[in-house]
Image 1 (cartoon, one colour):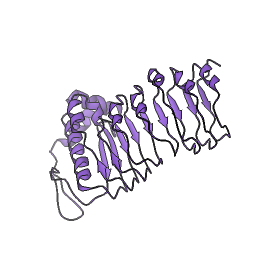
Image 2 (cartoon, rainbow, N blue to C red):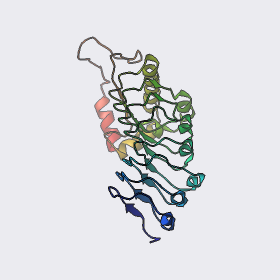
Image 3 (tube, one colour):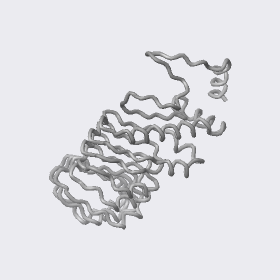
Image 4 (tube, rainbow, N blue to C red):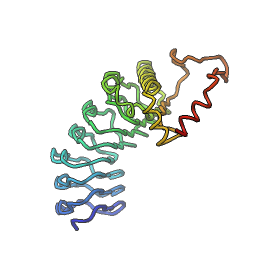
Length: 264
C-alpha cells in the first residue's frame, strides 16, 4: 500500500478517516468529495510528504479542519474545502499550495495571510455569495470570483505587481468578477489599475519572451483577461467612441509582422 498514489472515497458514508491513513506514504491525491457524514480527519494525514491534491468539497458534516505545521513539508498543490469549513490562517503557510478552490463556501472574508502563500497561482471563489472583501494578493495567474453577490471590496496589488515586474509570465492570466454587482467605486478602480499594469507589462515584455510564449500557445500565450460588470471605460483606453463600434487604425505591416512572429 505504500505505492498507492490515488485514493477516492467520494460519495461514501465514511464518518471518519482512520489514523492508519498515515501508512499510505506514497499518496498524492485524496478525494473525499460529497462525503456528507465525514466528521473527523486525523492530523496524521498531513504527515505525507507527497500529498498534492486534497479535496473536501461537499463534506457538510465537517465543521473543523486542523491544519498542522507538519503540512508545510508536504507538496500540496490543490486543496478544496467543504461548505461549512472556516479558513485557518495556517493554510497560507503551505509552501507548495498552487491551486486553491473555495467555491460555494459561506465565509465572508479571506485572511490577509493569503498573500504569504508564495506558490499560490490560481484562486477560485465562484459562488461565494457571502464573501464581502478580497484582501491584497500577490501576483496570481488567475482569480475567479464569479457570482460573489456580496463582494464590495477588492484591494489592489500594486506593490506585488511592482516587485514582480521582471517575471513577465506572472502577468498573463485571467481575473473574473462577473455578477459581482455590489463592487464599490474603489474596488472597480483597483481592478482597473491592476488590469492596466498587467496589460502594460505584457505589452512591453521583451521580444524573445513574446516569441517563446506565442510558440507555446498561439491563441493565448501573452493574453490578459479581466472581466467584470459595469458601464465605465477606463481613461487609459486609447481608442474610445460613442456607439456600438469603433475603428482602430493598425500599422500597415501589422499582419506580416504577426505572421513572422508565429512562424519564427
